[in-house]
Length: 396
Image (cartoon, rainbow, N blue to C red):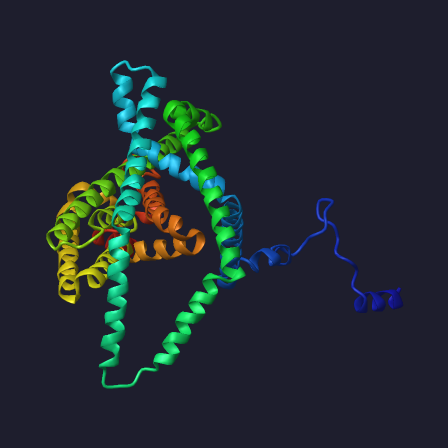
């Protein structure tokens, strides 16, 4: 017995069950969970979530880029339908059949687009010979002026560059580029036809299509989806109508200035100003630069400076008077946000991306503003008042 007792001192017995179960250290059971509860664990979880979101966004953007023939006409059709939504509501309210109202609105859109395209083609074709002659003369004057500079310019090098340019125009590489241009024209026509078809269905059956998409939602989620749809249509419509009005005023003002200064291609330049106005900040600068270059070639540097003055004056009137009244404060985005959106849109989809970037960004911000209620932004986007922050600090 003594030996048994001695051995029992040096070899403790295994843990005895309590109520039929073995006792387990609670710290050991929760040890893996505590690894994700400290600061580093929370940071790791957030980093993983961000990586997943970025991966999904990249996959979506890549998929959209592969089917731009479908996605771009879809977005354009949605924008035009949103812009003409008040017209459709007015026609239906007057008892006009849905099909007739749709055909009237669609015809108005096509007439506007066709008129703008026709003005550009007609004016350029009508004045192209005159501008070409003046451009040749302007180029010769530029070379003559370059010979009078105090430093030497290698004219043989200039002639070599011109010869290389002529060789490129007659080369196979230029021919392949022309074939690529034909393919781009075919894609444009396909996208245009698809946009017209989509626009017809959006105008005619837009409310029914949206009601079908809302079927899976219930309760608060349904109300939020309704708010998002209404906000998207109102934001896109307000943006397009306001921008078109501002662009028309800009184009008319610059057209008057170009006609007074007798600058050739005044009408196509004014139409170009109207189109480029849909690209904020960059569009106005590019339109003014093109107008000044045409004036420089055709009328000299004095008229070119006057054209620059006209463009700056019109842009100042637009930014300080027209936009706050026509666009409204709710449509105003910070200039930094606009620049970032333009850059991203241009990188992803070129000119079309630059045109669509700002309205899409405005829609995204509008959705945030109605996320928790008709006039209640999402929690993270609500302004923090100083009194509330001080009270929170005091309570803490």
